[in-house]
Length: 147
Image 1 (cartoon, rainbow, N blue to C red):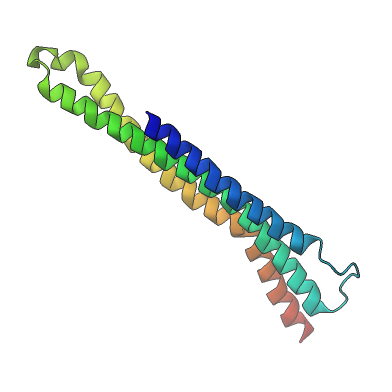
Image 2 (cartoon, rainbow, N blue to C red; image 1 turned 135 degrees about the vertical axis):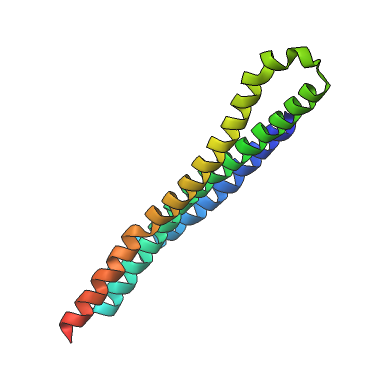
């Protein structure tokens, strides 16, 4: 159990470092050194693109943290399931019908955990880049109309 807590602390520490870096990047793009508002479309596009990429990075850090915690929990449940299976292999056969619901529950938990982790990871990565993709699409349309 000590390993699990150490892994948890390591994941949280890495996430905090990435979170701070993403926030610093976001603030650099959102509050640039030059106070003057950009009037050049290129500067405006660069500032908008930079702040949206930084915002996507912040969302991605959060999604990655949740993903890593889900993986860690899944590994822990997997280890518990293996230990339980070893116990069942050495237990008297007369106890097997009584212990079958617990074995089935652990197997179901593993299947549900893997599925939810994969769905969560896909959704979070797609949602974190949605605003950026929307602005890029709007920029393409704007450029076409200006020609």
